[in-house]
Length: 220
Image (cartoon, rainbow, N blue to C red; front, side):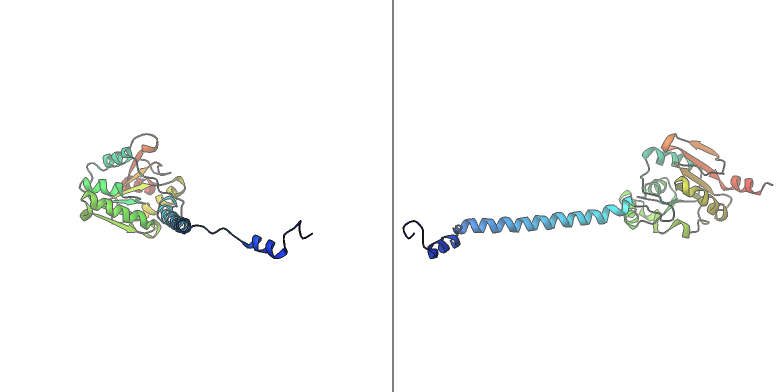
């Protein structure tokens, strides 16, 4: 027995013995661990920041009706400006998004306003107006369109969805003056007859004069 096996004390010492890492390897391991924690923190912080910034851009800007932010195409902007030719007064964009319609109207000489519920888009629109040199003739408001009265505006631009057009039609009929013009993009109003239409598909734009749809309403 004594010749064929090691003493219990010797076995215990062998099982507890661990090879020690050289100092330079220990330092390298700790450094890699620190960098791993740092990288995890940076990636996590970046993802949180992106979520906070991007989410408001893709969530509906108008809570009452689901109206996600979809930027106007250059052709849509061009068609809106065509409908504003020979017009005067102010321009308001309902659900102004990133402000491109407001900025384009201001460049064309109008006093232009935008209403948008999404604060990130409003701040970005203000920056775009400043960058384009028209911040003095533009104004952007963080507001729900259903809580705003548009009677003071002469030209109203709307990028809507079918679910909101009937309700908005009724609202504008009550609020706008007879010399006002309403310009609808992407989708027409359900009951009004447009004075003119330009563009095709998603770039289609309809122009409605308040005097015309008010006259339709007053006829027996």
